[in-house]
Length: 366
Image 1 (cartoon, one colour):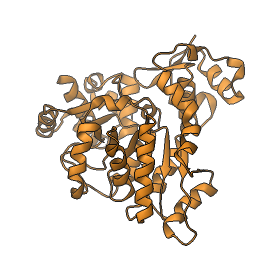
Image 2 (image 1 turned 180 degrees about the vertical axis):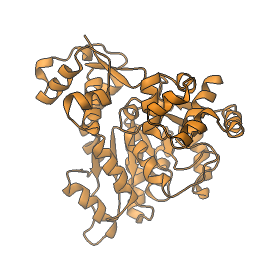
Image 3 (image 1 turned 60 degrees about the vertical axis):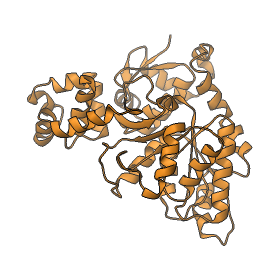
């Protein structure tokens, strides 16, 4: 419980977002060490006076309410230092330091795949979302979406109809299902999967939160399927996050006369994989899915031949040497962007050539 309190003091402090929080963890290893710092130490780290004051004088009433919330059955707090924090999500830029959850915590360890799309889909789009979600679920993938109206809802529904797990990432606190009409399916998800949010339980649904939560949907997934989307759509934000994170993006084409096909056609022009059947996705994901699923039981992948790597990956490994290094260190050493380094580290980790260490650092396997 004290550990939870320390985490809440850190993430509730004003002016300390995910990036700053993760940098503090990288420097001080855990929240308890951050809270033990003197104000001048925190100031030297770049924190403003208002943030330091908020950090060292937390809102105990709010923290007590959240701790009471965590005492309820099936309520969880998952930190970025926990063993079951999703490995793929851990690798993204601005990974959420903590996740609040309700439901089956073991669903964090499943192989996730995102399906997103329009909030006002056609009848055909709804049917496609359900059918693809059902077939992908039967194939062993756990559908991840945002519980929004339209394609999100029908994606979750398709998985649940097969009796399979599904994960919904909300842009508000978990004390209230948003939209309210999805309370019933929310209860089903809790029984078969997981509701997730990076926001404290009482957080209201603020428009700016939803684009932010989209990075989590794509970040914890092996790929993203866009079913229907207008030219300017929140689904395209998720797809763009996926591309930045090195994930596969898939899109279903539609009629030239359908305005909800404009977004998917645009993605296909940009390199998204055109999808006609579920097998188009399964075949593409098979290699990475095999690596992820077998990672915990196979040590063979830890000995991939260095000579078979692309030049850029060799350069990154050589820059690491055999030291424990952070993404920021590697950005400085290689001159690559944080997004590129994070994506390359993910691939190397899945191949068993590097290991993730506590505090967001990585080390090369011998």
